[in-house]
Amino acid sequence: MPQAKIGVIGGSGLYDIEGLTDIEEVNMDTPFGKPSDTITTGRLEGVGIAFLPRHGRGHHISPTEIPYRANIYALKWLGVEWLTSVNAVGSFKKEIKPGDLVIPDQLIDRTRSRVNSFFGEGIVVHIPFAEPFCPVLSQILYQAAKETGASVHLRGTYVAMEGPAFSTRAESRLYRSWGADIIGMTALPEAKLAREAEICYSIIAGVTDYDSWQEQGEPFSVDGILDILRKNSATIKKIIKLAVARIPKKRNCECATALKNAIATAPSFIPSEQKKKLDLLIGKYLKGES
Image (cartoon, rainbow, N blue to C red; front, side, top):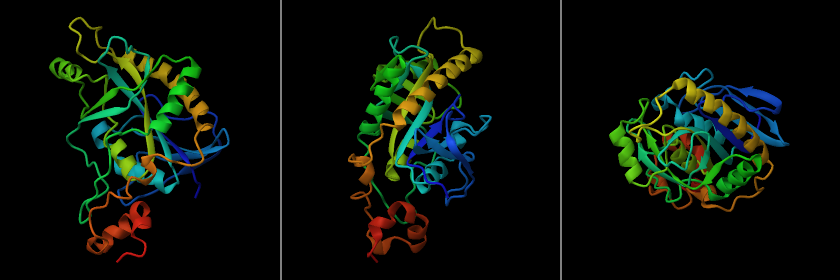
């Protein structure tokens, strides 16, 4: 089975990575079902890459129906340590314009219908999540974005909403009053699961519109949003190509050891079936324990 150190989850408008060599297609099952689609592995700038389209090729999986746990588990199983997520978002700030990119540093969870943890059913785990995105990876992505000439904003708060409908104007204004910067539908539970899997995770958010907070906003146009998505995707592909060559060989951030002090359940009380199911994630912490 191919191994990949770096993963990319493609969002709306990003369904492939250009320039990959040694390409292999990986179809797999996980203890949490099948991932969104076939995972494409290969090498980019000499580095092992795994690419997964979050909504499936053809964009047939809604944000609520995405198999988030299967996606993250599959990438972890392939060896991914660094994961870049590409997201389409709306903006709450005039200065964050359609066509801009944002590398957020904070999250607000407004999802309602999603399983947001690998754990439970006999094992309690409390991951540190004060800083939901890897600062090391975020900085690499920001520098790469600047070099492409993109209009990119470092830091910002991302509201993760349930969808698939967009916000009401009242909701949009509420989130704006909180000081949020952007809104999307897929950063959660993806970010939480990546942290539970001890994967460094950051987002490149491509702004497509101003959400619905403006009284006299531009009329909503799916075609207009799709056009911006295509342009953003072309830029993001360049950013990823630059960034992969700059990923450190060793990880020193808290993402890499997020589970070290997070497992609250005594090993002897963890059901054996859960130990087996979650061995990829917690096995190294249970060695020698009964």
